[in-house]
Amino acid sequence: MDWLSNFAGSSGIPVLIFAGFALFALILCVKKGWISFRGKGFNVGLEENERNIVRKQAQYVETILDGTIRDLPKNIIEGHDGYGYYRCKYIIGKIKDVYEDIIHLNHIENNDDYIDIKFEIVYNSILKLTDDEFFKTEDFKNYIRDLNEKLIKRLYKIRHGE
Image (cartoon, rainbow, N blue to C red):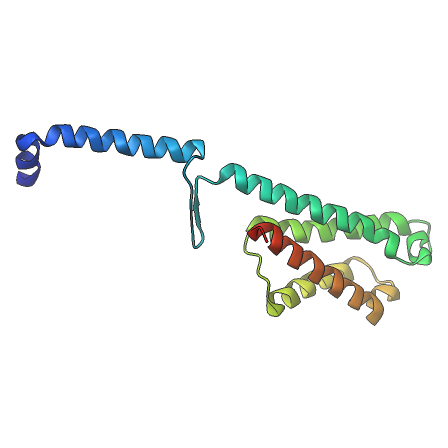
């Protein structure tokens, strides 16, 4: 503590007061969003920007997935028991949940391994919800694979401003 008394004794008090005000001003600027810092896995002062990115990503996923019900064959939508449309809406809702988790975890990558892993998660979640043979066909599997790739790549672009 000798260094502190020596420092304060030799006109250090004005320096400490200035450093305190400078730190307070820096914190205030970061809080207001005037200053921001983005490091690897660490963001400071980007709260509003981050909310806008997540909102855009969620809206994009919802828009694309709401349109997928039109792409399904009519006999699947009508269903064998009259509940096919609602079953498809439920499945699409569960797929949205998977993509919401992807968005909120905030570690979207634009490489083939990441896209394949997310495809497997989405496709397996579909297979858990239905036993209809249509959902097990290669055509449907390729459709979901292409849709997943399109969504992940676009979410990545939204995240990184490309």
